[in-house]
Amino acid sequence: MLTLFTVIQTFRGAAAVIQRNALRSWMLLHPEVQVLVFGEAEGGLEACWELGIHYDAEPELTALGAVRLDYMFAKAQKLARFNTLCYVPCDTLLLADFCEALNRVEALYPQFAMVGRNWDLSVQEAGSIGEAGWESRLRRATEREGRPNAAEHIAYVAFSKGLYVNDLPPLGVDEPGCANWLLWKAMTERVAVVDASEMVLAVHQHADVILQLWGEGEPGGERTEVRRLLRKHLPSVANAPLLLTAGDVVRNRWYRLRHWREWVQRGSVGAKRAMRGLRFHFGKIGKTAAEEAEKTEQESASRSVR
Image 1 (cartoon, rainbow, N blue to C red):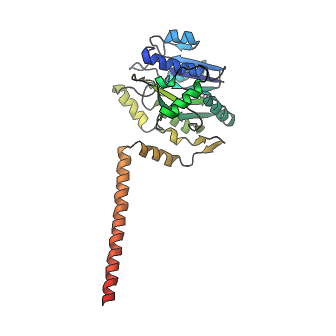
Image 2 (image 1 turned 180 degrees about the vertical axis):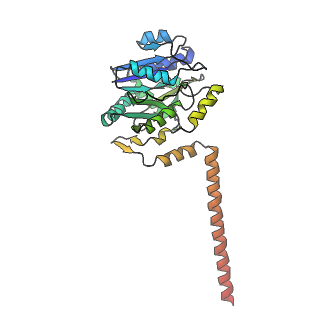
Image 3 (image 1 turned 90 degrees about the vertical axis):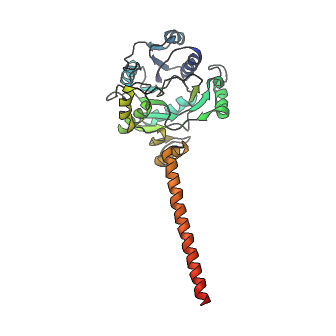
């Protein structure tokens, strides 16, 4: 069915609860699910033994101590028992609708990448994963308390085996923009890239503690170089050429408009300046037109008097 893989952080306090929740939700997706965990972290070995998960405690690291992207993707595809893999941060909950969406995409495309955005939800609201009715409670809590993230925050990257084999850079997995780089890579490979956000609820758990699991690392010397590589390759979920809907997979014909709308909604400085410029421009045109109309009316009145 599916091989999921991730990077873990220290199993302590809220971070332990968040990561256990995520891992348990993945194990409940389907009887035929394989989970691979990378990263040497306190309490990680014990948690993986408890859940029956493969644990790679000695991955190749960057100079800053982050698990390397190229190593993790190569090792995951080597260990995978299935032809479909998915990278997910270890703070993200997945539900049954993820497998339903994945099955639909797999049936249509032999080579693909499936991505989606997530919703933010407090770990306290997430509740106990695995108890009877937990998915329904989680959906209600997300509708009530959750907040959708922008399209740049990619919740998962599911892909057909063999897609990410060559030319992966030795980036740290916690590097900002890594998931966006993977999306760009899939788009350049001319495979089907599908945005499943409409059909999949992926829940990002948050707490006072910040997990550096997917591009939330602090800047540093090595990251300055990395960001130069990433800066020109940062598509978002809104740029995916295909959309998974309730009825079918359809072309995302308005992806440029969707991306621009996301940009405006985030309130970026550039977008605000653009909107101010448009208002000024059209306001100026409107003012000029009104002045011309008034002038014409005055001239007509003058001629009538004569």
